[in-house]
Each structure stands twice: as C-alpha cells, then as structure tokens.
Image (tube, rainbow, N blue to C red; front, side, top):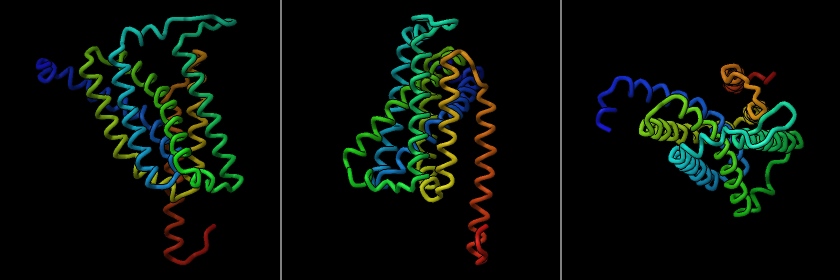
Amino acid sequence: MMHLLTSPEAWAALLTLTALEIVLGIDNVIFLSVIVSRIPEKQAHRARQIGLALALIFRIILLSLLVWLIGLTAPVFSFSAYDFSWRDLILIGGGLFLIAKATHEIHAEVEADDGEDDQKSGGSAFFWVIVQIIVIDIVFSLDSIITAIGMAQDIEIMIAAVVIACLIMYISSGPVSRFVAEHPTTKMLALAFLVLIGVALVADGFQFHIPRGYIYFAIAFSAAVEFFNVLAKRNRRKTGRPSA
C-alpha cells in the first residue's frame, strides 16, 4: 500500500481513472435526476442519497469479485452471428429499461401529467423509485468497473477512484436535480439523453460499440445550447420582454 502512495505511476492512474469514472457517472446522475423529479423534495433527497450509496456499494462489491466479473465477458450462448455473454445480456436489458423508462416519462410530459399520482402514493412511489435506481445502478456499475479493470492493475487504485467519483456524483446530483425540476425543457432534454444512452448500451450488448466521445459531445453541445436558452429566458424576464 505504501509503495502506491509514493509511485507517480499510481497517482497518474488514479487521476486518469477518477476522471473516466466521473465521465461514466454522468449517465447515472442524469437518470437519478430525472427519476427523483416525480416524488416530493424530501423523499427525492433521501432517494438520491440511497441511490448513490448503492452505486458506491455495487461498484466496490463488483471490484471485490474481479475473477467472477471477468468471467462475465465469456460467451454463454450464440444466436445467429453473435456470441452473448452475461455482460452483453445485462447491457441489453439495462439499455431497453432506459429506453422504456425515458419513453414513458416523455409521454407523461407530453400528456401534461404533473406526477400527482406519484405524489399521492407516498411510500409506494418512493419504493418504486429506489427499485429503478438499483436496477440502473447495477447496469452502470458493471460498465464502469469493467472499464476500471482495463485501466488499472491495483484494486486499491480502483476503489479509491470509484469512491472519489461517487462523492463528486453525490455533490453534483443535488444541483442537477434542482435544475432539472425548475426547468421543464431541460428534463425533456435529459430524457432524450437517456434514450441515447439506452441505445448505446443495447448496441454494446450486440458488440457494436458507439464511441462514448460522440455521445458525450452530443450531450455537452445540447446542454450548452439549453444553458444559453435558459439564460436568455431569465434575461427576458428581467427586462420584461415577452418570451419567443
């Protein structure tokens, strides 16, 4: 352990892997922000805490099961020209779940469903939110940890990077959730991102890798446009000009 603290290579690996885990965690934060927006604020805060704590726990457990995890990439059956592993099946299932969930939420937004039913159901709505967070945490954790295994050799570095990334996710999830709740158009944009991410996960499951750089660039570009749109609306309110 001490030799890692004095090794420049170890620190470089930690910084690189932490940055990568933060980028991979963007998907998780977006999903978390959208899913908790339909329950009361007090419950939403607790759901974010539970969701991110579970994300950290799942990642550490998966890191502790490296041999089993690496075995997930071994083919379990073949169909047509494709060999499917457990990892592929989890990614396909998680991607389809994201697409279905985001499509359902988009439909609710278009139909002007303000989520009153969710608000009234209280504990059951909170329980269902936690279940959905657990499912998607497992999917994102799997992808994140397989990446960590390929990037670093020491499990101490992997765990440190995962803990730091989850702390940053926890700090950022609150402001992101509040921003999404306050600006309905950003929620629709976030739901569109989830559909995009779901498609990428399904494609990965079929061994067709979409470079994440393209996806993150599209997200960053769309988020920048939406940021300026929100800023313009705020300035129009201040000057008393009508919105376009």
